[in-house]
Image (tube, rainbow, N blue to C red; front, top):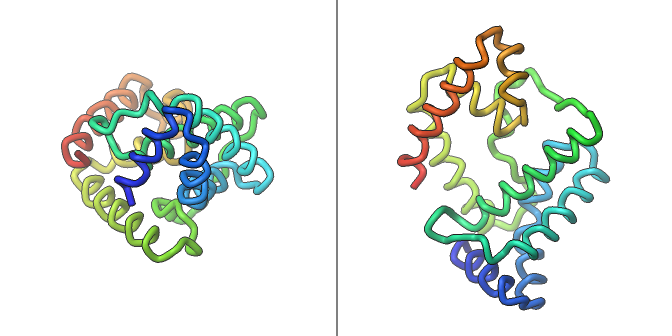
Length: 180
């Protein structure tokens, strides 16, 4: 499936509308789940998904298969659109008391082959996250999953801003080779 996403993105970069339609049909359930998790409201998640796919269409030529998986690239576009929307609306992220229950950002109603792809990716991510120190792991998840800024993390964790930035930077440096 991943190769298919990369191929579809490549075709989209050549303005292939049929490829874009297929990409939307296959990737939108996962990306909508991510948007919904961040936005907490279906109507806002739908707006984010629409904005994300517009950017995916416009920037498909900037996707580089050597730098990562197509779904990861599209999820990053979606996440950034969601965070932009939240900041523009001055909304706060809803956090739960369940520790990082949202690592599986896709909904359960995905088709089986999509669910298998996602669960393999999530399992790999979980294994890589285990390599991190607890403080690094917490900062990275709160930053990338819940969308907290470095400043917010500094205040939330009662740690100096430089420490939080260093934890995240070093954690990402550890994750990069593991996830490649």
